[in-house]
Length: 378
Image 1 (cartoon, rainbow, N blue to C red):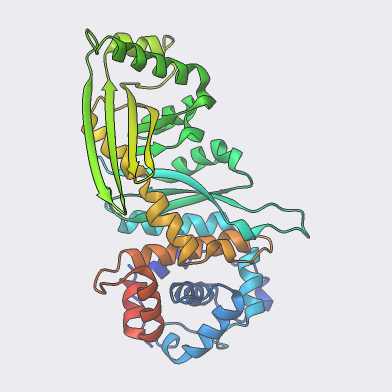
Image 2: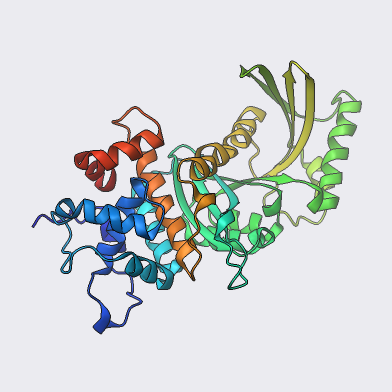
């Protein structure tokens, strides 16, 4: 019986602690995980469909899994993933992504949260789970994710996520929820740089940056060293122009942070987006702080890259993987199934031989077992 090489994704899940009592184990945990990953890749979004997929591919699975008692039932899949420690599963996921990702110096890693809307459990009085993910924008990979019960708890989830990852040399971008001094310090301590959005939740800092740029603009930036960049994009019936100003002068940064509470603060940033459509124009200023004393062009590129986590990850999970429609709710099931979706998304996103979208790849993986093996094992 052919065995997958030791460098494959399955090896990273082989040592998980099985939550079942030993005498009740009829199926190997790694077999259950492998079937669930493959089924998720191919479009299954419930334990019933995962069982159905496994039975339809039994002969293929027997070429590299032991399956001593065939394909587990949907009740077994549901019970195992409801009880499986989600932290262990996530640590195995992170171990795998760190093994395959080649994070380049200066790569932007975007951190943002997303709620799985149908994961709420009214019977158990549990709200929908909120997941905070780290997205490597050049690698097109989810590096890891952490669960929090509510969006407001992203402040506590982000440090946990940063602790899991090796981001040395990267640029970490986070929206205003993560604009916290402790988070900035943790990013610097990990050898990375930060670009943090600043909104009214950081009232004094937000007012300071706004007043700094408004004052400098009123003077025509006379006597205020600054850098400037802009981009223009046309499409879908609109023109979008983004302008970026950065101030890195020490006296200006001392004005913003007189007590030096923001670790390695090197730049204040203002970005103004202008959107012109047939109905008129919209302008909106946004403010950021950064540990990078970089040109405006680089900081604007990092800020724009941040939003790929919405377009390339969250949108795909919602539309293609139908994450918001998933009704798995029992115990750890929602969080563990979310990790399976992230695994499937990573594998499909980085399979480049088939020149179609994620949905086309999922369909082809279900039809073509050789292609599924390629997606799974790389």
